[in-house]
Length: 379
Image 1 (cartoon, rainbow, N blue to C red):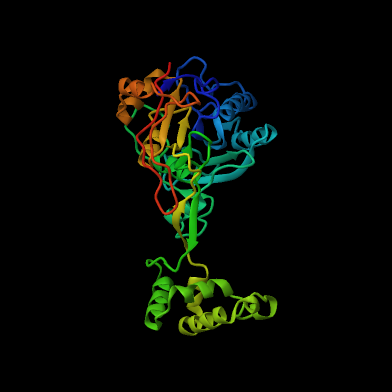
Image 2 (tube, rainbow, N blue to C red):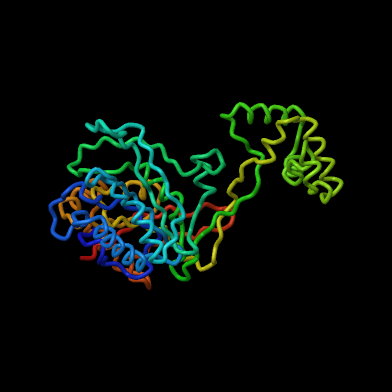
């Protein structure tokens, strides 16, 4: 944990894999700290200050790193100030890609005294990226979408908090951002990011009635993995209108066509469950250097360390920065950090100047490492 300004980070270049943060919203709360962001005179001034932050974060991000930015809007002279849209435009002008505008839909909220407008029950998570960036949609979809792309609306209730921080965001929000965009393992020598290796699977979601029925029909008919592979190879090109508009089936071998016909005769319409069945992870790419480290998550407005809680749960290294020393102390206690031991562990730094940890590299057919927590005790 560090006490510092988010616009001047005491971190080496290209040392962070993902920034997950929620900066102070414009004119929403005064945290009583000199130099704080959020008390600028106008929305335009606020966006300029936040753009300065983005420029600094770009410096510390690896080439495949990105930013998950939780932002909300505010009313000014009876109109929404348009803060998220202004941030998006400024980021695009600065060379970032806005890959997603995720809607954080709050399932509950505080009472609102307004009588001439609807109560706001959502905020945004902007995913700002370079041209090429790390993204693990497969792993995320397994947890949140039954293998399918879950979409850009996150229904997450606000967390009740007894901390003195005025606006903590939920651990679940940070968890989702990290699952999507922070690699599990990165080579500290060459920068190789371990990528998930997947293969098609006949394993369906047993919580879905259609999937349960499909699996029962397949078991009763004694269908094999070869049958499922044949179904995926032919797809739906030999059913209904697709017979007239698609020609893929005719290019499959006679054996594949025979197996697909057997499977579809047994399954009927339920063959579609296996046609678009989920993929399973069979391993991770490996550069062979044997110097893999866990992905590193930075929150430059760390508050009480919510992002750190999610990062540690997911086996990533975490560093939190806040301008308010009071929140720094709260976060240290919350995360159970011992800065003295952290400083001792950081004596053997890697070439980037960031403390290094020993961890086995991910190889094919094995899981990535679960290294110890990482942070810097620099001042």
